[in-house]
Image 1 (tube, rainbow, N blue to C red):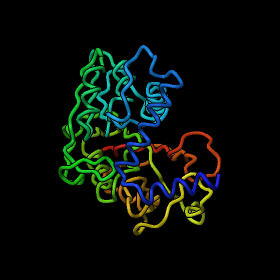
Image 2: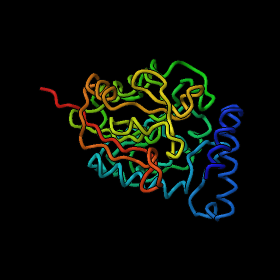
Image 3: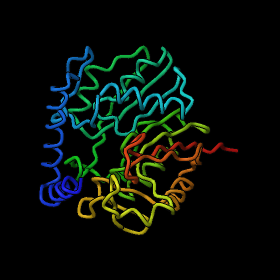
Image 4: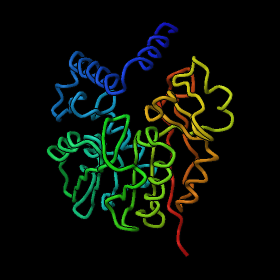
Length: 283
C-alpha cells in the first residue's frame, strides 16, 4: 500500500494535470472494456473524450439519483438544476423520472460531454443543456472566472438542485459564488444536494496523515487541498467557513452532512461527503 501511495504522489508531482487526467481516463476506459461495462444497452461515454467519473456510468448515476431524490424530496413535476452535469450521468435517471410538467436544466464547461448528453438523454419533460463558458485548470477549459458565471435559471425558478463532485474542484471564491447563485435560483424551501469535502474540527488533526484515503494540506484559511500546486484537483473547506458561505447565500442545513470515506483509512460508503441545503423561506 505504501508503494502505491508513493507512486501516486510521484505521478501527481511530475506529470501535467491534463496528462494525469488523460492517463486515468484511458485506463478507466480499458477497465470498462475488460469488465464488459460497454456492452450495456444504454450508451456509454468514453472517458478520454468526455472526462466522466469512475465506476459504472449508469449504475453510479442511479445511485446518486437515489441519494438526491431522497435528500430533496424529488417530485416528477420539479424543475431540477444540475450544476456541472458533464455527459449526463445524473441527467439520464432524472430525465426518465420527470413527468410532462417536469423540467431539467444542466450546465457544464465541456462541449464534448454536453454533446453526448444532448444526443442521448430523453424525457417526457423539458430537458435543456447549457455550456458554462468558465475556465478550469483541472479540466483544461478557458473562459471567464467561475465566480463571474450566472446560472441559466431565473430567480426562484428551481425546485431542486444538485452538484455531484463539483465543489471538490472549485476554488473558494468560485464555491462561494456558486452557493450564492444556487440561493438565487432556488425557490423558498427548495433544496441543493451536493457532494464534496467538508472538514469538521475533529478531522483536522488527521488530514495530513498519508494513510488517509485522500490526505490534504493547508491551502489558505479554512481551505485544504490534496495538492497545493494544483488545488482544483481536490479541495476541501472547513465547516465553519462553509457555514458562513451558506448563510450569506440564504441557505440553511436541511440535514446533517453524511461523511464520506475520503478522510478515513477504510473505503466504506461513498467517497465524498453528502450535503443537503435548503433555501430559507421568505417572510
